[in-house]
Length: 182
Image (cartoon, rainbow, N blue to C red; front, side, top):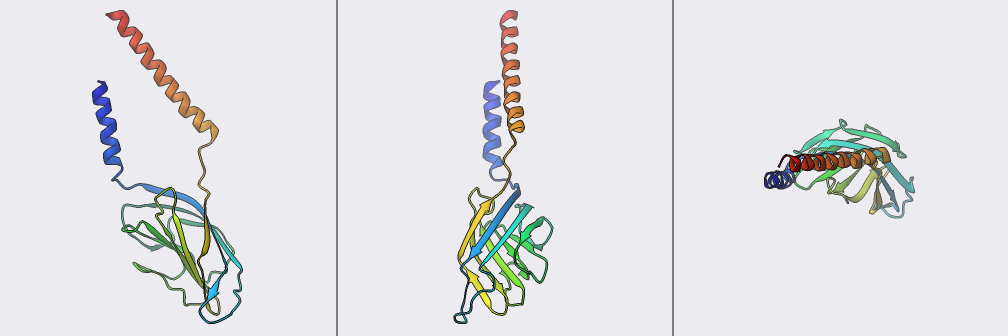
């Protein structure tokens, strides 16, 4: 019985890692120190922060869409709605306005912006540069990504630990009853 249970656990771990998962993250990206290739033009925004919640299935490429993206706050006057796309081969997400499928974003129209996050399915995704257009094209390579995804509440942990306790009690009781029968 123990061998069968061990085999089932190992099989689940081995095959489970190759399957797609549903990703849900709440993140905040903050950028500063913008520069432009058109000479010394001061950025109209010294800092841009976007806080968002992203929910999607990483089993395949996702073309630009607003479904699964909730912008919680954005301190940049985006001209269009903010959308995202997912690249399965690189596990990257592109977020912004004027997204181009299988490419990224077009940041050459007034009020447009975009940025990439590498390794979105991992525990430590990497934030890439943000580019926006507001009279000129500005780029920042100075960004910070903060994961705001909620951790389980203490009551959830208590139920989880309590469940293990009940399983342990049941196994102990089962063993005692088997010992009496023999």
